[in-house]
Image (cartoon, rainbow over all chains, first blue to last red; front, side, top):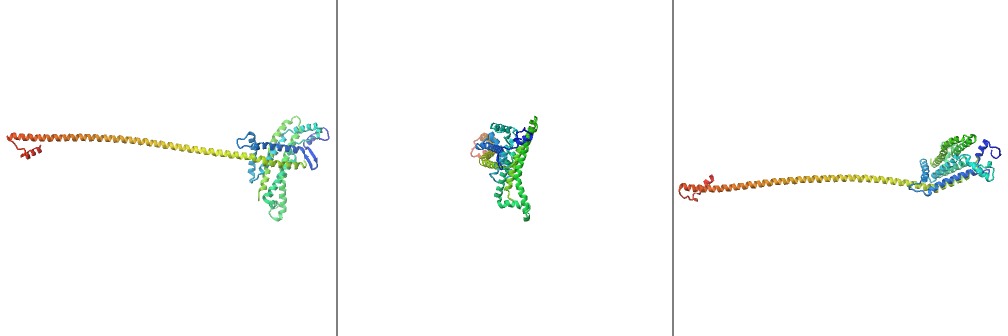
Length: 266
Length: 156
């Protein structure tokens, strides 16, 4: 609805909330809000964990260190129970994914209008039309964010597949797998290529879909239900509280599974 | 919901975050955890060892005590035996002494009696000779008639 200057309607309100603050044209558009919030949260994660890493003691840990170690050990045991090779990348990668995605998902619990409203006030003070100031605070509701994560994982999958099995081995896995007869190689290739591509696609779309749907329901509650929205917000937030860490965990878990599959030599 | 350059920015951020985490976050925390785990394991092992040592020492002490008690009992037993032995020996020696003294007394009495008897015999012989002299009214040559006298004496 924003942009026409008319009175706000429900669809306009929703549309406004689902629009990113963008800079640039065509492909070279940058979603400033997604970038700022995700990088900010990533830096927050690194700052918090780095502060422990710097002063980590093997003696009696402080409360904050114990808390961080809890997360690190949780990730470590998850990696160790699934991935049986030796890799210096997978465990820190999993930790980064888990905490970063968790922090980004947690942005969903901030009341939907709170940060956009502040952004609009700041925008208005700087002389912009408040209806043109967009702010989407949950980076994981932006496909660019989730695809960036899954493409990073996908590149690592291909890197490790080629590193462990060689390029020939990797290609052989693509064309010689379900039916090991030369005249069915083309069929194998279609199957395996689709399943290979489906991995990053499903990985990113699962996270995006869950968080986008959750965010959308928050927006719908805020847009359509008047006075009684607070308890309903609470109920949905309580339910969503399960989805937020679960989706972060699933993303991490599937990353580990895909990478350990890439390490397996048939 | 369109794909655009944001993806590239996020991908770069992702790679940088992972690299930073890999280099500066994960290893120190993991090291601290593993070191602490090792410390705890060492501590537990040490405490277990100490417990075992204590058990061993207690067992040893109990064994020593038992041995000492047995030794003490042995010594007491020996002492008792020795005491009764000494008492027995002394009693026996006393008995022997008594027997000896009694036997000595007996033999002394016997000797005295024999001596008295000899004396008596001699006196009887003299008396017989004197009596015979009186009866015969003459001197009897004791030496000449000694065979008769001696016969007489033997008959007494």
